[in-house]
Every structure is written in C-alpha cells, then in structure tokens.
Length: 356
Length: 222
Image (cartoon, rainbow over all chains, first blue to last red; front, side, top):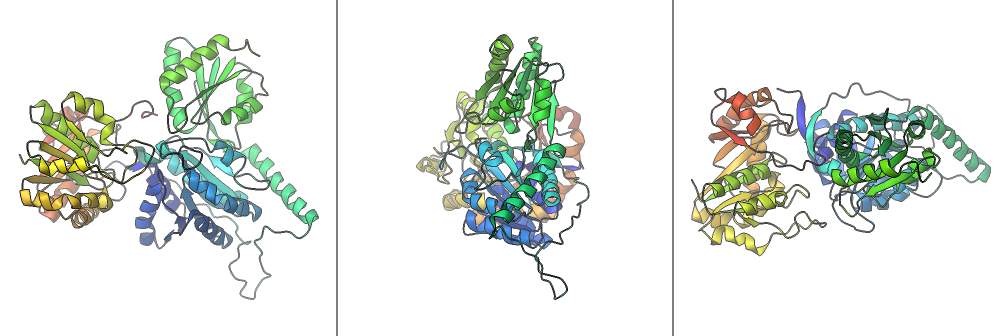
C-alpha cells in the first residue's frame, strides 16, 4: 500500500500536531476549520491527549496560555472571526514569552463575512494580532502536505524562540484533499526549565507573567524580545520560487493564490513572457532579501492576494518601491482565476519600469 | 435496479463524486433521474459544483439553496421530499459524511423503508486517515446505520489518493474491501477507479467501474 493517505488540509494539520507531540487542543467550531476539532475529538482520546471544546474562542486561547505555561505543546485553531476573539490571548502569549501553535483557516470578512476562503487576515497576523509590540511567526501553507509539515515546523520554531507560531491558511487549504506523507521525522526536545510545573521545594519559583510594575523593566523586556525577532528575521525566512531566476515579472503570492499564480506563470511563459513566482512560506519574517534581489532583474512585480491588497505593502517595502507593484485581487470568498493573473502579468510586462 | 440509490460513507470517501457519476450515467442511458444533495456537513465541495453538467444531462438537482453560498446553514429544502413522493424518478442521494452527516437521512428513512425499493451503498476509501483498516471502516459503517436508521445493502471500494492514484494503490486495498465485506456480510458491489486507470486494472480486479473525477482545476494541481 502507498505510504500516503488522502487528507483534508484541516485533518493534516490536526494529525501533524499529534505527531509533533501536541497532546492538548482547545477550540470552538467555526467553518471552514471545524474538521480540525472533529478530527482531534476522535484522535486525542486514543493517544492519551486532551480534546476540549471550550465555551468560546476566548476561553480556548486562555486554556492554551495555561498549558503553554506548564511547558507542554498546545494548539488552538479557528477561522477569522474566531481569531479576532483570540486576539487578547495572543498578546498575552507574546507578553509571557510562551510557545504555542495557533491556526487561522481564513474566511471572508470583515465581521461575520462568509465561509468561503480569504487571505484578508494578513495584516492581523503580521502586524496587529493584539495590543503591544510583538510578532508571531506566521507560516503560510500552499498544499495539504505543507499543512502538515508547517505544523511540525511551527511547533519547533515556537519552542525554540518561546513565542506563538501561527499557521495562516485559507478555507481552500483547509477543505481540499491531497495525498500526504506523514513522515515528519523526529520530535526535537527543547529546554523548558522556565515552565511552571511545581517547585517540589527543590528550586526557586518560575514566574510566567506579562505584567511589569516598572517601566524601565518593561522597556528591557520589549528590547530583549526584539533582539530575538531580529535573530529570527536573519535565520528563519522561508520561501519557494518557481521560474524566478530570469523573470521580468515576479508574481508574489502565498497559499491558494500561489497555486493559481503558478498556472498563470506557465501560461505566460508559453506566450513568451518571462514570468516567475516567489512564494513566501513565512509571512513573518517576510522574505525581504529575496524580493530585493529579484528587483535587480525584474521590471515589475504582481501581488496576487485574496484581500484588498495587504501583502502588497510588504512587497513595496522590501523592494523600497524600486519597481512598480501591480495588484491582482479577489475578495469576499472569491479566488483569482489564472486568466485574471495572466492579464496582470501581461500588463506588468508592458508597463513595467515606466512608472518607476 | 432499485428505484433509490443512496451513497453514504465516512467523511471524504468520495460520495459526492460517485453520486454525480452515477446520476449522469443513469440519465444518459435514458432513465428519468434526480440527484439529491443531503450533505449538511461539507461546506465547500458539493453536488452543485457539477450543476451545469447535470442539467445538460437532464438530471433534476435537489440541493440546499445555501450550498456553495457564503453561509453555513445545515438546512434542507422542502423539495427534498420529492425523493420519496415522486416515484417516477430514479433518485440518487448523496448523503453527508460520517454519522453526523447521515443524521439528515433519518428524516427520509421511514418513507424509504416503507417503499422498500432502495439500495444503500457504503463508499470506502482505505487511504483516508481514520478508515485505513477494515475494522475502522466497519465501525464507521455501523455508526452511519445507527444515525440514519437505515441498513446498508452493499459496499463500493472507492480507495484513491486523488489525481495521483496509481493502479497498484487500488490493488493493494482489495484485501481490505473483501475483509470489510466479510465482516459486514454485505456484497462488494464494485471497485470504482478513475477512467485513466481502468485499462491497467482490467483482469486484476473483479467488477471495475470507471468514473470521472470532478474537481476544480484552477488550483487543483500544485
């Protein structure tokens, strides 16, 4: 029998969490990520783990803070409106320097929006997941296989840097089915001597806390956290590229958008346009250097997004507005078609360089 | 052939695709056919994705007005009663996945049992993560029977890995399908395989039924 299974994206990330040693999941159902909870409700009892459907998203994220404080791997998942509810907890996780894995299978917004796929929480994930100065590691899968592998990677990064890793997927990634290999390798162990697990009278108290009574001290905590962020920006950037080496037009897209873009790029090449794709896998840290390097040979960029245009700001910042960046977008649960992306590539090829 | 054919099974086993294939086949052979989407579980991939093709083939489609919309309302239209009220049609029913999805079938179960002209087929895919063995699939089968108040009459082995399925992947599951058939005392009706694989499997499996994969191609290949 093949060593693969046929999984929905939501199931793949749930199973990968179990394989990564996560034995605590707290969540609340919301389309299009409910399969994560449904799957873990069946699986967690079989591996001696805890599945708990909390009374709300807010309760769930606070349970995550509790388990993370005890040094155990923990996950919660939701979709856009539910992630908004978790925002306070995301800020507290950052303030307490706690590792956790949070999944957002995005749907159209704002407000209740709709249940069809979206990428319009890009700003939320990369800029403003809650109050205060902080970042989350933001990982953007573009296949069911990556839904699994990035969960595994996300738990590692979260433990390594003591911070939240977010899987920023979209409804399509959650719902689509593809074959997956669940060979994830060894689970790495990290020092968690900071965890609050009871002193047994043998050591001083560990304290997990985001409150500081002294502004001087709170400033130092922030500065220290940003030293860590600088290290991450240097070491943990991940991206994928496709026909980008000699490209005149660089398409930048992640998740389902990158899949559509890839098809459009193949069509553009067939028409003699040198187009290529740079697909950020980490949205924070953003692959700034890769884009800056590409700006040396590309005459224009195209940002393909399921939002009104959010990542486009990071593209412009990365290349210091050195080249024009065109936007190809659909919103409200709609997905750009390969034809729409191709039309933008053709426009960029014609106008590229003239505006700059 | 019974007047009503129900496709039920575990989540993501390929029920919708089989129901659409079967309804198209019936209609094209001249049978007056309707297809009813009873799925109250799956938000994205629905019978309605194949609406144009079904309409062209003259298949009457009964589907929730909310399917493929921007809301998630687990409600069924009153037109659903046509499945049992209008016996001039051959009815193909796409039941939602798992026991939760099969709950909705309970509403039609008394009339279907009374009419007693119905096949209920268990669609199995042994490459799905929670039904990789015959005993796991059997447990799912029993849960669905309990939730729907209906009994299965046969098994379809629809094991696949999507568009990347190789012939040997299907062959390897035959032993599980037979085991499930023995366990449940239900006949293995057929093994459904994508059209492109049917040739290389002929002679190696009994009762191969070629089907077409209905999927969205804009972003399906990566």
